[in-house]
Image 1 (cartoon, rainbow, N blue to C red):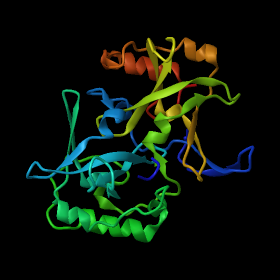
Image 2 (tube, rainbow, N blue to C red; image 1 turned 45 degrees about the vertical axis):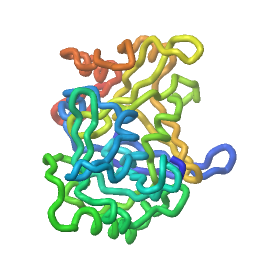
Image 3 (cartoon, one colour; image 1 turned 90 degrees about the vertical axis):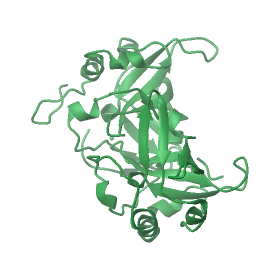
Image 4 (spheres, one colour; image 1 turned 30 degrees about the horizontal axis):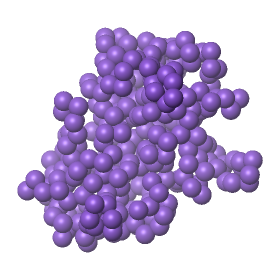
Length: 293
């Protein structure tokens, strides 16, 4: 199995201490603050990864193995694993996220794709260890043709995303949700601010918050800090796709941030709480689009 931001420009190159090329990017999004912070439910990326993909006959055809994000937090592609037995001998492809019918009800994900096992076996496959195919415009055009132009597709709700309507979009570098979840939040002084426990999606299936684990002993967490995605910077090592998220805050400032208790994070659904979080981190915007500082 392959190994699995506050303006509108992506990507500036830098060199790491050991000579490894990295890319730093700042968030970009056309979403309004109300949309980006609209959490109708607590939708965890951790529970979306691993979800069975079913077809219209209610037969499992694949599993979601990972998610490819834009620096702005859009879900661009889902890495699907199919075939094999118990995950062994699986083949992998990347399906445009808009080609999936994705629902979240009562804490559970439902994902559908209008294909049979035999259909999916004909999909362009990922052969590289680091999903390099996703940086190739020709390969991207092939999977868009395969998944989005094969006759009638699954009915999907309209989503206001930058990659709607099935427009082919190769990525400059492969940003995986699993790599973010395996990382630790840093600040410009390279202080460790805590482990990224999860990513939460808004109503449009875009990343709204990182959940940072703080406190507890021996790995146990007793409270968590939600950090607005729009305030998080990302530095990536393109060789192994490892990601270092960062935020311009000290440990003392993070310790005073609003917290949620328990790993269901439902405090974020309390009236006004998400706005309180965004205001603390300076992510509340005027109508003209400038951020409060």
